[in-house]
Length: 406
Image (cartoon, rainbow, N blue to C red; front, side):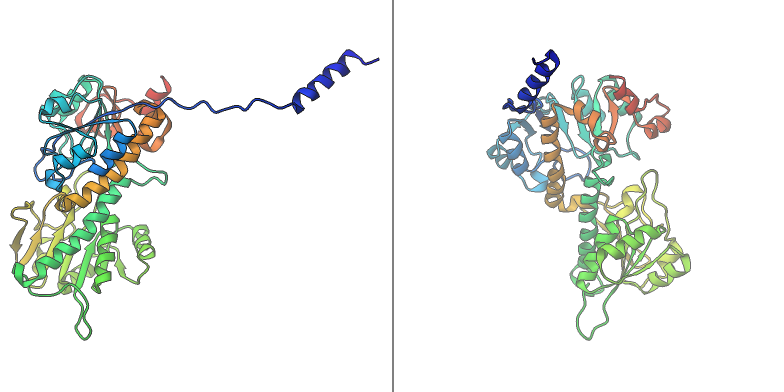
């Protein structure tokens, strides 16, 4: 006679061996996004946040993109390019600011914030040196969630858009220097390259970050003799490793730097600091020792510049001479190649927007992705950046604590 315990055991075995229903993963509910792209109004800004191809990609995935007429003109994208990609063209700036997500290259002005709606999501750069206190307060009053694209981190802890813009700026700086050296631009008529039997030009690059690395790579590919200076041994080693060529590197020692500047034909300032002003490492006296007709391209001018003789110039009048040395000090150098730079921005923005949709909204991505969370400086009206809070004496809260309390 079979006991009740044996019977139950037998039934359990039969149940385990019988075909089971397939368990399907419950998918996350996608969210359709309404994205607004206003025309950039900041002086000398020529980039646009999304190119037509990316707009078409987003529209084909069920999202709505509203772009202000003329937003892509300075990057040579017409309204027709965007409309053919599925975007809606608006001739009213206020209509664009009614979208749920605002995508901008530069921070919004106080006037633009006035047009924003309650509890909106804003993507833009966070320019700490010019971010006005009253603009922050107005964003907080409107309960805006503000995300700085230049502070969003990727999987390895780097800043993807900053790196992309740095790559463009470094290469562009070398191309600009090459133009300024030519006789047609009242230069000394020297070709920035290597020709058999002719001594190659010399270039000094101050800064071994992304800008410095790509400037060095571009110059070396032309056959230029390159010397790179930085106070970080780690960055200097990484530059040598990544470039794959033997290149002279040195920490910033005044005597060594003066000797290199005295002999060079081009000097590029590529120092970058996370906060505050760029350190000025080349004094006026050091510039005086440079060769007549040599060229300085100060990419660091966005944060004050690393040459004492540097002063901000414009795209219309990009250069000036000091001690017979040509200075190019246009801020936001990536904007001078606005079409290429717009593709660089768009290549990162469009997958990010798709991920926001796939996760079911921006809040979900903030809660689950530490790198994305790193870019948030205002969360639903609460300031979460300790640096901004301490700089402007504003109350702030830790974002991780805010998220855990939800």
